[in-house]
Image (cartoon, helix red, strand yellow):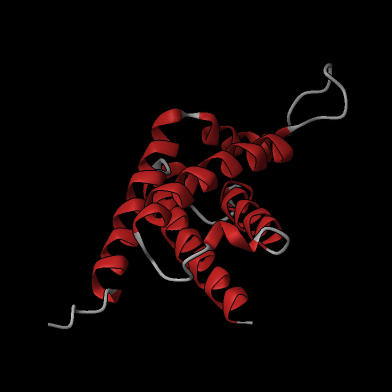
Length: 140
């Protein structure tokens, strides 16, 4: 149970950072009410669901069950790959001759390496700060 709580906490932090960075990098016209922002922000939510789904059978991926050195680098990389998988799931059409609906066009931004790098960098930074504050002081 402790492992699932930790996994949920990690994924929540990754999701919050990803949505914040993604919303900050959205062009101004897409921030208007009635814009297709839902599909753009659906991609990080799908990636978080995929990460939780992968962590249930492979809980050793979060082995120390605390924010420690390897997790603050590997989790954002895994989440970035899952962002690409989620974006391809959202934008995949059943037939190659079909056009992508206009409301799904913003989801194509997730295929930009710059956006994935911004998200992964911000997630690494936040997880590193959590690791520094969560570290136990050494006993002398």
